[in-house]
Image (cartoon, rainbow, N blue to C red):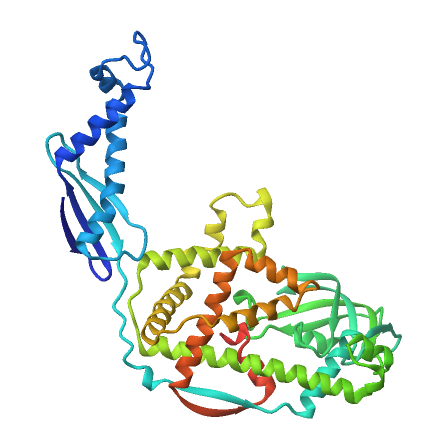
Length: 446
C-alpha cells in the first residue's frame, strides 16, 4: 500500500492512499462468491447460478461495496504508516478505480496544532477582595420582603414606587409603529423597566386620567429604527397599586428558614452567610474566567476547523434547548433552525471553546493532573443536596457513565485553573459585592 501526506495549508492535510489492484481483485472475487451462495436469480436454483451471471447482475454493487470496505480497512493502516492524528472525521474521495490499476483515494482532514506552554509564568490574576457590608445584608432582606409584598389599590395620584396598570398607544409623526401599543401593561414606577420618560409622565396622575406623553427613545435603544426619535404616547391610567412590605415577624422568619426565637438577628446572620457563599462562588467564577482568558491570549493557537464545526452544532443545540425552540413541534420546519441560528452566531465562541480545550488538555498532560476522586464525590453531593432524595440522585449519576464523565471533566477543569492560579502572580482588587456580581453575569460579557 502506497501513502503520501500532503499539507493543504494550516492544519489541513490530504492523505493519498493507493491499494494494490491484486488486493482489490481478491476482495471483489470473494464478495461475488459469497453472493453466489445466497442470491436468487431466475432460471437457476438458489446458490447454483454461474459466477459470471452473478457478476453481470451484481458486479457493480459488489464493486462499490468492496471499495467502501477497503477504504474502511486501510484507513487505520494508512494513518499508522503516515504517523498523523486526525482532529476530526475525514472526508474520503475515490480518485481512481480503473480495472487493472491500484484503487486510489484521498482522505482530507485536520490535525491537532502543536501547543507550547511557554508563557504560563506571565499569567497575572486580579483576585477580588469583597467585604460583605451591613448595607449588602439590608439590601438582601429588602429583596426578600419585596418578594412577599402585597399590592393595595389606592385612589391617590401615582408616585414613584407605585405599580400602575396602563393602556398606551404610541405614534411617530402621527403614524403608529410596531410595538408601540399595549393594554393592561403593569409598570413599577422608578424601576426603569420601561421608558423612563413615560414612567415620569405617569407620576401625579390619578386612575381614570387620559393624557399624552412625548417620549424620546435613548440613543442605545434595542431597536435601531427608534433610536433618538420622539414618539407621542396616548396614555390611559387604569389602576394605581401601592406596594406594602411584610413585617419581619415570626411568620416571615419561619418562611425563610429562621427560628422565630432567633429574631431579626438570626435572619441577618443567615443572609450574611448566604451572601458570603455567593461572593465566594462569584470570585471563583471571575478568577477562572480571567486566568483562562490570559491562557488563551498568551498562547494563541490555530484550531482545527472540523472541531470548530462540531462545537458550533453543540452551541446551536444548547441555544435551541435554552430558547425551547425544540418544543415548537411542527411549527418550525427542518432547516429553519439553522436559518434562525446561523453558524456565524456561534463561530467565535466555538473557536474559543476548542482553543481552550486544547490548551487545558496540554496543561493536564504537562502537569500530570488527574481528577480528584474526593472532589468529584463532593461535587456530586453538592448537586444532590438540591433534591429531596439526594441518595437517589447520586445513584442515578453513578448509573450513567456519561454524566459521571461530565462531572469529572468539570472537576478536572477546576483543578487546572487552581494549578494555573498557583503559578501566577496575584493582585488584590477591592470591589463591592454589587460590582462583583455584575462582573460575572452574562450581560457583563462573561
